[in-house]
Image (tube, rainbow, N blue to C red; front, side, top):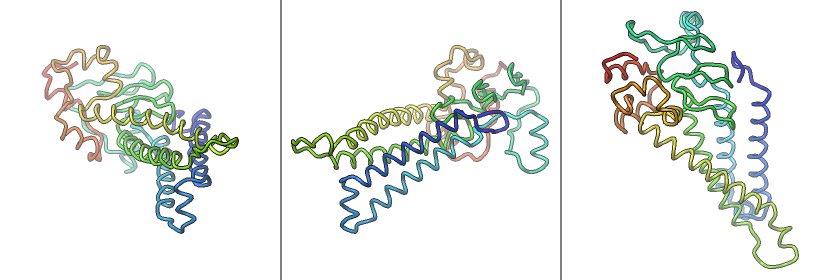
Length: 267
């Protein structure tokens, strides 16, 4: 994503590829001799309809997460202007005695846990990672929705794998490959995607329960506020409060308040 929210050309093609692949797999499973098609023929339309709605829901969630602001840090003037017009997000108040560092790339004041993404060309609040499949960063604002997207996608993939398997034709004949080629390829792709999504979802839920991010977990020794902290994870407030803050909080968090509450010396 380019500065100002414009869609990068590469991101457009990634989103087109995702939508086309999802639609092609879903349509193929509906048109082949699978459990879903057999139910359609018997007039039992509930499960085919739910499957289609889940696929559409996963695609809509994908576009929402990939196109929304992940928590870009805005220049002070822009923040004040947006707040005056009532159009901005509520920016958490940071104690006046805490000095924020300036980003060496975009020169904005960088809140704690923010990181500059050179692909998005923005600093992102509570930066987790830049997702190439989304062509967007995962940060404080879109991370909860990213988890919802992964959960829905996992359900779709598991169901799609079951449907593809139900249509495989196991009787030996000359036309065996012709009958099974699409479903075999579909099942293989779904199996690979299922493993990837499952690993992503489990790892993210673990990190969220600890109130840490992928970037902090991978680069703990290089991040100043973690390297100099007396605690291994100064943001961890227990699993229940961590999950509640992540999924239920409607506002951005001033992580400096939590950090300096547990660490007496500024970093």
